[in-house]
Image 1 (cartoon, rainbow, N blue to C red):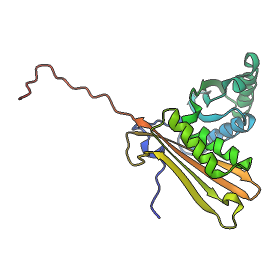
Image 2 (image 1 turned 45 degrees about the vertical axis):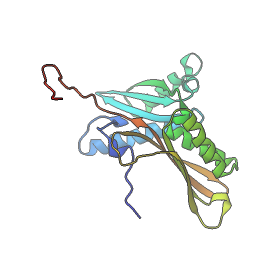
Image 3 (image 1 turned 90 degrees about the vertical axis):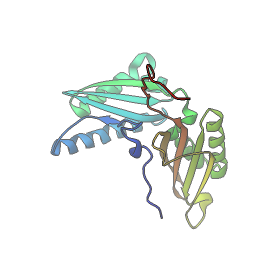
Image 4 (image 1 turned 60 degrees about the horizontal axis):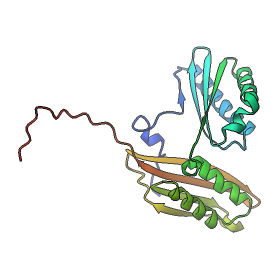
Length: 222
């Protein structure tokens, strides 16, 4: 078995940033970390059908800013902002701090790895064939502009006695190239035969830094 590296963690501060941006020392760090887990878990459970991909948390003195990336912002915001106002009040009671909730829309959910993995997992719960679900998701992602996608399902597929893993890939997914924009997401499907895990890698192209070259006054020989 080879050693696997998380596609997002490997690219931190190269082409990716942290989902939680704050600083603490000692015991305070552990307390805030568990608070982040509680915030994310509460939002995911209270908006289970809102297609939430990512939750970013930023901390300031006595203030927390929570940014929710979702494909269905109307469900999170609610009518005239009622749902997001209730969510903000619940988070303020949970944390004891002033909370600001921002909602950002995901314009293309077909190439968001977390949402694709969740979609495949929900299809498995409806007893749709894993091969058909993976193939359909991969084809749709490539049609929407992805340069490559890999989907893997692991568990008691089709109710088999022995667990196994199967995967499908289209295009190219360069996992070792640091400048490659590889989105990664996971989901779990709760079936009658047990739990099936779904992993998705989506390659969206390369992110290149701006090269500043001074070409004025430079002689280049022919």
